Image (cartoon, rainbow, N blue to C red; front, side, top):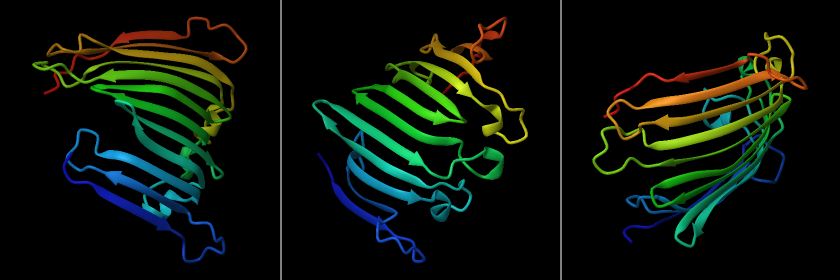
Length: 212
């Protein structure tokens, strides 16, 4: 199995009067394995990412991040609340809550669940990606994703945008992913919440990049 590193971390701001650590957790890492993070168990309490990385937005994240083997698969789950959400132009993240489930099974990654409270509305999605087959001319891989939006307010994404409530759906997939010139097929539909979409949709076969 190769080298194994067992890591323990705990971070508490020196100026905090709260006895609860901002970040505490353990992880088991296999540096040269195909999946280097074998297990992880992190607990966050009002974590401000900007204190660790000054260029990051201000946050106050509370929740858990867990990853562990599940039979022959590897599963990760993330559940977070952000008490300091806000618009991007004001140095915040417009996400109040995030629930995510990710599974690795061999060369396939599957996003089983993405459920987020974003910009006054809700974003839900799922998707999967298969690694490029041997001898493939592209590193894009075969993938597809599906995201649904409900009640998204653009003004809660960027403060200078006009307030609204938008519903929509975005579907994307790789086209000819094994070729030297793969494409991305996108189908997007956005309309005011509570109304049927008019001609508010687009479809494009993306540029045919040649990945090495």
